[in-house]
Length: 372
Image 1 (cartoon, rainbow, N blue to C red):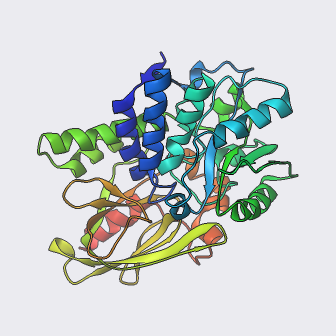
Image 2: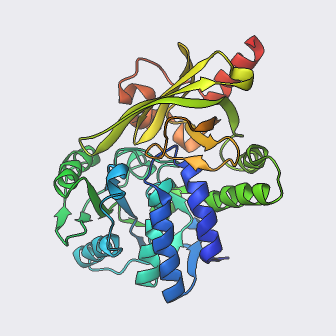
């Protein structure tokens, strides 16, 4: 049965999506406000399980691409992604049955809700990344055979582009340059697919999982319970693996720069409690990619590496991370669909230039616990 999404669910979604977003996908706060305004105007939004989408109908995913930090200064009008969807409807000569996220992280978990509300269509409870990733070919849609273009791009000025490429790697290459020239951010629609393709290629029920995680954190805080244990309970019962604590400490250094349409940098955390005397180093490109304690790897892409406030369990994005923050770093195993050899070729550690083969975070964690 479809689920109807109101303002409280969007509050929970924003928190849960920041957690699964591994620091990226854009700050969900702005997107949350945009969706809640739409709900007050248009009513609740329908969330559909992928199995409820007719095989022959089309779904058009919508999102923001670019450097998330820039969104703090370049506030959108709110209709850019909808315009990109309309551009593709005109191109294909068909009306979208639904929209869906390309990733379940941060701002990009909320933008499709704005589109769904304004277009009067449902949103599909699934996505193509299972987290957030920095590049557009890093989607299960691409890995399992969906063509990403034609693609629509709009900016807040009303400049737009209809892009068509021969493959999805070139989609990323060309659209990234367009986004840079649009001011570092573009609002997009891409990977038009049928309901049958959604069922075959998407990671199911990630949006409702974000809501469950956000609700678990909220309720834990209201009841003065441990939010980390609440997160672990929700992830334990999902298609992901159970969340595990990788590190606890104080942020002592953050290096962050916006280049080539990405936010790149690293964070250093000085340990306390059981991690006293150790340091955690995390590299990020929009999203957290690699985590080391000293010289030892403790988690790597595509598994999720997420910073949370040590007191509340509320996630901290890469653009929000600051000196002096007291944080817990969680590692969360990804679903099996994200760990296939084809998937790891697209978003494994070697793609990002690291000289490591992928090792699941739960295996690394078990080894460290035994040694400890």
